[in-house]
Every structure is written in C-alpha cells, then in structure tokens.
Length: 73
Image (spheres, rainbow, N blue to C red):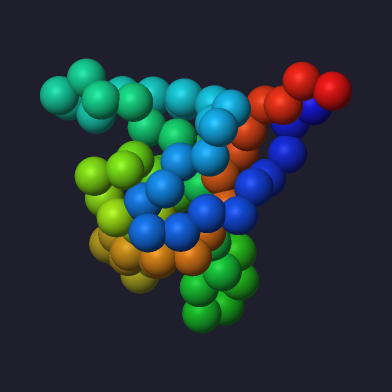
C-alpha cells in the first residue's frame, strides 16, 4: 500500500520511496507540504532538515511535511 506519512525536520519515515538522486548520489524522496495557497509537491532528504518545495520561482524549506511511503499490509 502506498500512502503519505507525516514527518518533520528532515526525518524520512520507514518505507519511504526513493524517487531520484542528488548530484552527489544521495537519494531523494518525494514530499508534500502545505504552504501559503495550498499543498505543494517537493523533495526531502535528511541533510535538508526540511522538505524543499518550489514556490515563487525558488525553493522554500518547510519543516512539517508528508513523505510518500510503501507499506506492506
């Protein structure tokens, strides 16, 4: 089952689905966060300390977010 799990401050929940890599090879995970006018999709990894979402032509750090995870049922 795939679902969204709440996380914060760069934490990555168990079962998070890697969706890409940074230039240094570290995995990126898909995140979503509420910011100003709605929910925005972005990326997260532990080193960010937050989820990075696009807004207004740049990336914004949001400390409370959700991460897409796969959990066995």
